[in-house]
Image (cartoon, rainbow, N blue to C red; front, side, top):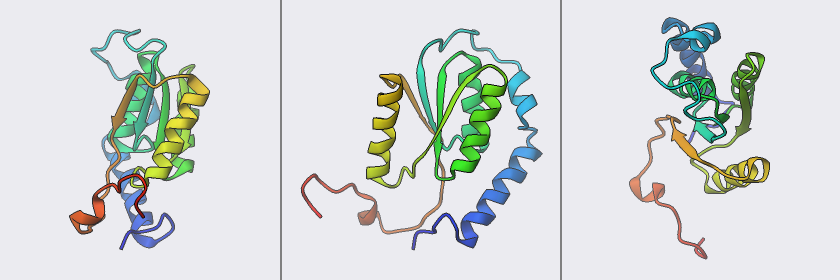
Length: 149
């Protein structure tokens, strides 16, 4: 059974991620100033989607891409977390946007891509940092072919 965003498993996971971010010193100030080996304009004017961008490695990746001057779209299941990341980027003069999407849902992924293409005209880079352990049979993970139920 797949947990829904409001159930206790998801809440516990979100709380754990927040604690992990704090333990690893992933506060906004640290992410905004941590030394980087990337050229300052490496991703200038590129459009970058980071799935799982609301916490952990995805959040750090979003910061790094934004600091390299990309237009960053953080994506994930919890809009509130994504909005916090996007707002923190923009508060430092970086370019961020937040679009909620569950990458386990093909329709949601299609809507994410359509939204990004409508807003920015292209997608230059996609970083999949979304994580989750949702046990199910492999047969249930396969994408369905067009025209089949």
